[in-house]
Length: 599
View 1 (tube, rainbow, N blue to C red):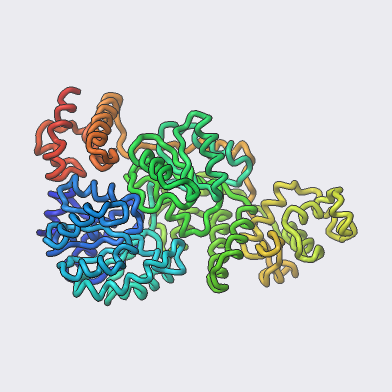
View 2: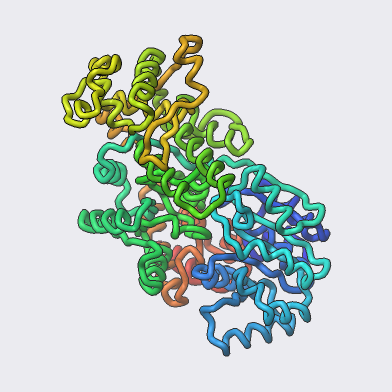
């Protein structure tokens, strides 16, 4: 079948977006492809449509066992013959799916990498016509990526069982090094590379210094009650404490981390996917492959490991194209904790060095004094076209000051105390603090003792953080965050170079900034249309409950908004809505048209 016809009749869209058509054409003509496309950019259509257009069954490799059922349910609503094969199925269900595969009934089969690599699965696909193989979350194949999975390294040997079928690797996050790894490790053959722009124009980025993180979170959420969101914390204990405090404050908040039993994790994830306005507080164990389109915000209460991880995690907001918010608070202690985690890992020294460099790059991005969106895109080798559509730096450009003298004082104090102490002790010495530790070590006799008493503790902490972010200092993870000078310091200490630093906003200004940006709907609804929209959401929820699927599997909010505005009265008009294909018209058209007729 023609890809354009599949797009219109099955998926209910009139036009392809971005590079989708080029990718699909490459697959239909038997070419391998690497696709790097932002979350919400339509990656799935790049393999689903050629999977339907080509003869045989498309094999989709995904690490997301917990979400396969929902992914397959969404396709079945469209009339696509899809199934998944993983350990959640009993032996009779697995046997039925194997029979469907052998008979050529299935259009798409989702399978986890470890399952695909089993001898019995490889034997099964040996006798089946394979349309294509799609490797989703392909960054997992790279040991340099932020989410490496060893099973992915073995996938290349599956090529021996798929004949001439084209392979496509897809991810939302991959720098140049990771892209090269994907092509090499999956043995993609003369792969065409499609690297779409990384800009998520609908996400507003905001970063603040960590002062009172729970209060900062409450300030941020004050105008967002009833919205779905994700809050990331570094530790399981922080997840539990934060979720409980949010619940005590009246938010529908649930914890998610690897320490919870599998049943609790599954229930909490399902409630997040199927109910409105739920907040999940999680470690990074949560989120990959989450298809929920109406996540309105992602909050980080601790620094993630890298810009790649941050981009991947914030990309879970605003998949429907409506305005969304990425909010993060951070401090130098976050850097020390993450550096210790890198240092104590089992990785080799090369990987540890790269991970530390990535962490430093993230801290530098946090401290940026120019457009935050442009800096994020630049990291991935992309450029911002036009004006920034929303970041805190462009909303309120930071004030900078000549920090040369203050930096020289701080660096000198680090040297004179032996490069053995963290920022807190250095600042105490500079401010002339009367502490027993200082007197015991004789640091009150140093020339740097008290030379910074005119600068507040908070400002010194900002200076220390920026010196680390700009590469003048290293927080040694093997020595509890002790600060050490780098080679960059020499010209600064000699007076051969100057240093501009940013002024941190006052607490009140930070609070106003956190509250100022509120969500703007993708489509502005008047009062009457808004009421119709809510009734349509209720109908969608009732149908979803009947079929035991998440509401967005029936229709996305964007389709319901369009429905509330245009109020179609016939099957033809209903079919003209975005996201309505022939199958959904037949399944749901009459019920929604009836509801619209009552409005």
